[in-house]
Each structure stands twice: as structure tokens, then as C-alpha cells.
Length: 326
Image (cartoon, rainbow, N blue to C red; front, side):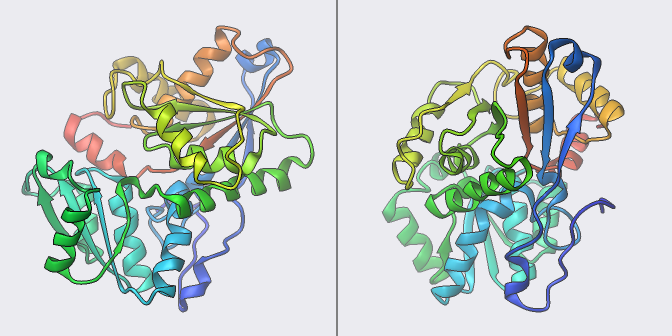
């Protein structure tokens, strides 16, 4: 358990809704001084409900309004999808345990025993785990497939893979309000964050309303993410926001891919700044930002806020799978 997490031990459902904003820390480094760049980290890795930090970070922001909607609709079961090491699955499992929902996780791939640390955590939180082969998993958004799941499990509140939907954007847009409290009218030149499904990115873009240029560092190969984010923004109240783009050059080969260079950077970053990164999301974000700073991408006098989205629960599984300590 991280000693600096904000912890909310719940006696009532409404106690988890409005925790204090996660802190913003400024980093100091010779490279930043040389390039005349101010660098801040929005520490959503320190924001969590419960004791583990799993139901926290951008997963808490994505789930917040969805869980409120589920409770308002009288639903007591959550069903969602994810890979075997999914931060989202783990967050939904812990949210269910803390807030009194039954949870069902539809896992991409075949069942493998013993369970990896992520799925073991989900099971210990009471989540029912069911496995789908990859071909079947691709049907997860089809109406007929979802209807079949309802016939099988009964009524449930459906959470998409990664938790990204319109209600998730609403929760992630609240990041902008927290930054406004910290920075006042002097918003940073750039806000940057890692992105997979694009939900946190779209929410932040919507909330900022063009007050900062937003950079999403894609952790996936391919150029589809821009269209996905644009589609999400078209459903928001601030669909005219244009001051953003996807940085495609730091995925290290694709989702969950990594290199020795990335692992070395994560170790060095932790030693220098006492901030843990993961190799799937935040490690790629910070590696990319520092590489771009070194290459003079950001003009002198720029200020950057990097959103540390959390998601550190996957480190145990990564270390077990690859035999690499982080």
C-alpha cells in the first residue's frame, strides 16, 4: 500500500464521490533548466478509493459517473471487458467490492492457471471471471452479443472495455477544473497524458476548452486513435475543441511492448524523482516528453503538465511475466 495515497474507507455509498484533488508536483532537472521548460506532474497515481490504489487515477475518474448512473438506475451488477492484465478490470472489481456491486469480467483470451496477479486480485474482490476467445471478444459491442449476455447473467450495467463512454468523459473533464484551481488563470502551455481508448484524453480536451494544447501519447500502433477521440468529442458539450493532437512515436512497438531503453528510463526516473512509472502507459508518456524536450520540440518558456494516470497495479503482473523488476 502506497503511504501517500489518499484513502477513503467507506461506510456509505456517497463517501467516495468527492475526494480532494490529486496534487501537482513540479520536477526540477538540469535538462529542464537548460531548455527553459517548466515541468509539472498531476499525481493521479496518489488518488484512490480504498486501500490498494487500484480503484483510483483515471480509472476512478472514468467510473465515477457510471457508478452513480448504475446506482440511480437500481442496477446492482456491473459487467465489463478487458485483457488479462487490465487496469480497468481490476478497478471495476475493487469498485464493486467497496460500493456493493456484483461484478462480472469478460476476459480476452483463454483461462490460464495459476491466475496472474491482476486476475487474482479481481477474483479476491469477488468478480466473476469468464473467458472469451479473441474472435468472440471482437463482438463485444454488438447488440445481439450483449443481449445474449443479459440472457445468461440477467440485467446488468454495461461498462465498455477501458471504461470509455460519454459518462467517463464527464469524469475526466473534471481534471481541467482541478488544474484551474492549481494554476489559476495561467494554464500550462501543454497538457500531456498516455492514451489507449482515448477516453481520458477526450475528457481532458473537453474540460480544458482550448486553454492548453493537449498531447495524447498513444500506447498503441496505428493511426486510428485520432478518429476515435474525435468521435468521442463529437458527443461532448465542447465538441469544437481543436487544440490537441495524438503523438504516435512512443508506443515502443505497440500495446504492452517495451524495450530495454524504456525500462532503463523508468528506473532512472524513479531514482531521480521518486515517482513510479509503468511500462504500458506512463513510462511511455514520460519517456516521450523528456525525449521531445531534449530535441527542442517545446519552445523556451513552455510549461508542461504530465498527467500521471495511475494504473500501477499491472506492474506485479509485468514483473512476473517478464522477470524484470521495476
